Image 1 (cartoon, rainbow over the protein chains, first blue to last red):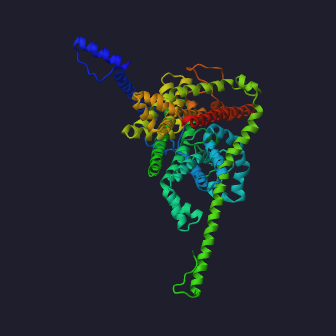
Image 2: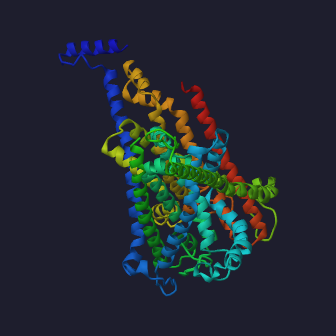
Image 3: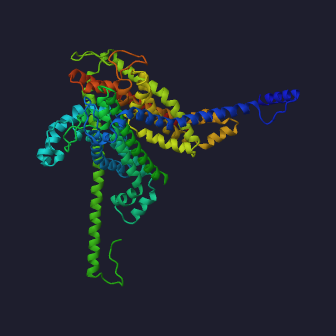
Amino acid sequence: MTEIVARDAAQAAAATGVPTRPSRSWTEIGSEIGDRIYSWSITGFAAFVPILLLLIFLAVGLAAWPALRTFGFSFLTSSDWDPVAGHFGAAPAIYGTIVSSLLALLIATPLALGVAVFLSEFAPPWLRQPVAFGVDMLAAVPSVIYGLWGIFVLIPFLREFLMPFLRDTLHLGVLPLFNGPAYGSSMLAAGLILAIMCLPYISAVTREVLLAVPRSQREAAVGLGATRWEVIRDAVIPYARSGIIGGIILGLGRALGETMAVTMLIGNRHEISASLFAPGYTMASLIANEFSEATGDLHLSALMAVGFVLLLVTFLVNAIARWLVWQTAKER
Amino acid sequence: MATAQTTWGGAPSGRQRAVAERTQRSIRRRRVRSHIMIGLMYAAAVIAILPLLLIVIHLLRMGASSLNLAFFTQTQRPPGEAGGGMANAIVGTLILIAIASAVGLPVGIGAGLYLAEKRATLLATTVRFLADVLNGLPSIVMGIFAWSLLVKPVKHFSALAGGMALGAMMIPMVTRTTEEMVRLVPISLREAALALGYSRWRTSLSIVLRTALGGIVTGALVAMARIAGETAPLLFTALGNQFWSTSLRAPIAALPLQIYNYAISPYDEWHTQAWAAAVVLVGIVLVISLAARVATRRRYGAGD
């Protein structure tokens, strides 16, 4: 078929006296055009990813601009949030975001590292599958369901049991951290739910980098007479360190931007309080909670400005984390 | 190993015996510490799984009892009135997932193909990195993005904007899984097709993509499961709707939004409905995840 077409073309060319290149048949030309279209379209799709990111920065930045221009740097440092008077300062939300995320990491990191080491080094085969599946499922549960569970199970538990226990039974109430009335909705509740939510991310990345540690590293340590724990502590973890740190920072990124569960549990109040028992705000929960009732353009723009700060911070945190994880994985 | 070695034969001296004993003691101490640490890791695994078990138990106990036919066939009743359902929210969630897939899958799969085929170009490295970063950005940011692009200019909330926001979230996830799956296809398969005279684009689409299809479907389903429960982006875009609506240009109800609104409401009837909706939402996520598992198995069954 191809040859016939080529021959016909050659004959036609000979008849009209137009020279042709005999090596190129129509199908070849067709497939070359196809190749070019294919190559362009996948390049276009790929280029869409950076364009999307750029669009996100532009769109959120433009929406935030009026508020940022009005308040300047004091937007980050002022804790005066008064829609009626038209003053907006995001300091309590920024403070709440940092405190709740750090609290979450403080709780989640040791657990996540423990689970990851357990799964990659110690777990008997029959236990490995179900535990790994369970931890993965923690990441699959929608945020709003954590919020629902938090409102009706975690908060009553905190109010009735954990908070009085910490404050009165353990006498930790003398510290400002555990002082004050136990409402339930609090920084502590947000930190706990965030810990549960970012645990699977930290442990997944840690597991991945632990698996990238070469066997020889472990065997050398065993050969020197190390116990099973010493193999982990002295041979495996130092080798995977930057990847593990990347995983923890990735968990931090998740915690910083988590919205629904935190909005439902943190109590939503513009206040900087030393106590973990007191309600607070995070950047994400502030936006989610006030968006629907935002009156006036400046209020809306102030919320978008909070979103812009959140975008910048999470972008940086994720970029650093990814870079660290890549560094480790590359050595494989 | 740790027995005292005498330098020039004969019985070990008192000092050598003391050294040996100290070594023995230190070994015992190190062993005990090792056992304790391993025990702690078992404990960490138990504690990490505990919340999942608690959530599942509460979901089943609180939600399953208020699931009935009305829940799937009716729309919401005014507060204080028992009964009613969330048919509109269930359909709304499915519509949102469909729009998101229509936006996210083609772009994600195309970008993934590019990453797998042109691995080392500057664009590929950049896209790979940015896709990972994009994947970690908070979903609420996607909501603001879609709001200022698709809602603010036209001055009304819409299902379309909600689907677009979710679709944008799917792109980086699908990109990365597609890349990984396409990379798993042996290079010899591609070479064989090219040697048989297939053009490059046909090799890519009908040989490589087809071989990787099971894995790509799995990745797509996992991404769909993840966005199915997203709430934050919908607050700014789909908004929610208490009435029956399937219009893409009007606000639309969605299960996660409904759960949020009902959970923070003061009405007991709505609380039970929220739990029921949570069961249905988890059910949808679970069905999609199970489908993903089946797709994976089929890939391994037919792959080689």
